[in-house]
Image (cartoon, rainbow, N blue to C red; front, side):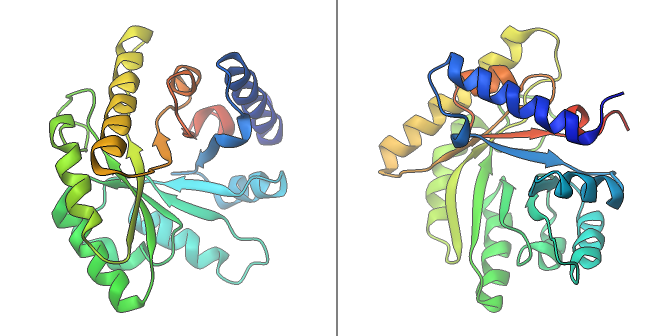
Length: 229
């Protein structure tokens, strides 16, 4: 069984080789280590290996981890990558670097209100449901441009891209089609609204190579780094 350090090295090598294959630079692709349900010791091991950015899906778990690292010399950089309920916004949004899961004006408004009170700004991504699965969060692709336009009007939020969760499928054509859809939305929104959004967050353990080939700038990987839960 490979160590977390070895796994991180392997993932970075895969990112680099995939990026080179499609004419991209590996430094333009951010690896977010998905640490939900992982123990503090595993996060510490990744930190000691030089990794900094971690993704969490649940508010209470993230809050507990933020509290643990509050007085530690080495702290993770946190991205929130799970569905966020409006009544839990106040617990985390002033303590994270990026919120990847804005999927409604209502949520964005609550986040903006709290950030304004706290005199903080936050980089956010708009989550799009490209698979059409009811179990997944995210706005409908047809509503993405309008949602981005509405969120842009809110203070203290910096809209810098789109995020999606690909289908959990062994059929590459299925999830690649979803990545292509997100990339097209990304290009259309930048063009139509005159934006320069930077990020496409798509790709996880089973599909991150395909996501990079289709333009992903952020990959969210847990199992391939930390092992099976």
